[in-house]
Image (tube, rainbow, N blue to C red; front, side, top):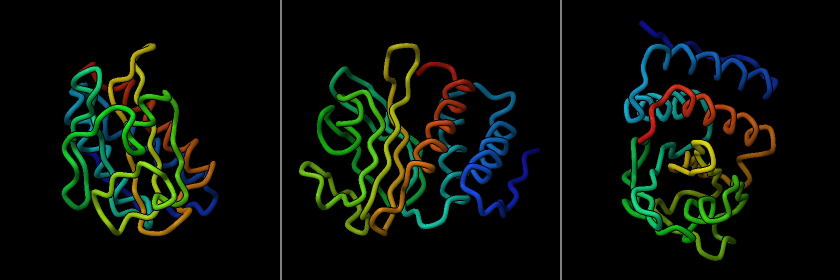
Length: 164
């Protein structure tokens, strides 16, 4: 059985390497995308400081993301592709790192406490199946090291999980 352990590595790249190792252990032998999303969100929410939301949105129609497993306050259920940070990440097919969500013209405020956001598209080949979304209650919570680390976490999730 998997047992999470506290990560006490002060170096961000080392922290994310340890986190990735824990995620690999957590997902080992399981390929169900929903179960893996639930455990990935729980691990991220538990391990990363200063988050108020961690979870997934999955592309259910060509133009709409639907809420998946998450940790945090209740969230918006449906987001149009091209709307908000999550929908923009899908439309532009790239990670979005937003230092101040209030300065993002089309931010969707599911939780008014959120101040910064990191959204990583989930690719299966050339197709996007959804996004991994992290919100924080402080501005500029995420930097380039966090982006690289969470992109690696998203890739591990996708490698372990069957297509939705």
